Length: 207
Image 1 (cartoon, rainbow, N blue to C red):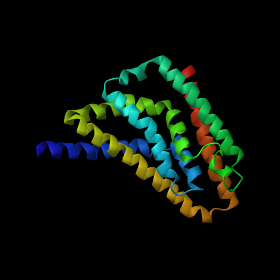
Image 2 (image 1 turned 180 degrees about the vertical axis):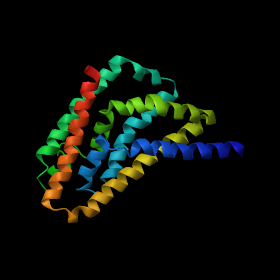
Image 3 (image 1 turned 45 degrees about the horizontal axis):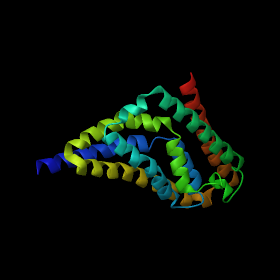
């Protein structure tokens, strides 16, 4: 009974810690806003795409390979490739900011699921979070065995899922209130966020 209580307390604390990272404005948030304009369940698809990167990563850390992300070559590779990808996505979104429809959702070449994969995999600070804070949480979860780890992994991802679907549904339901100017400002801002983070990621690994 005590073990179950301790596990519950840990998972509850993990929710609060996870939300501090999940709710931070960043590439995933920006693309969720953009995709949410066209599709109210875009956030769910983005969260599933995010999970395609996150679940294998959590498993990787669980078996003891968090140190891989400490290598400078790993940081440089993720920073450069990820930065260029975010800039590309941001430019595409910026060019389409004045359009209403499919192109306004960022880029017609990829959907919400793929967008979740790209914006997650392109963010080196996502990997840094998991190599530090996330690794500490996984280490604690491992005290409760494989079941503790699985419950933690699902709980953490559910924080992503709930937040992303909340954002996309909020954007979708409020879009009728958007004037063309508001539309341009929102999509322009999302584009700037992607380009800004992409530039920051590149600069941070080459300086």
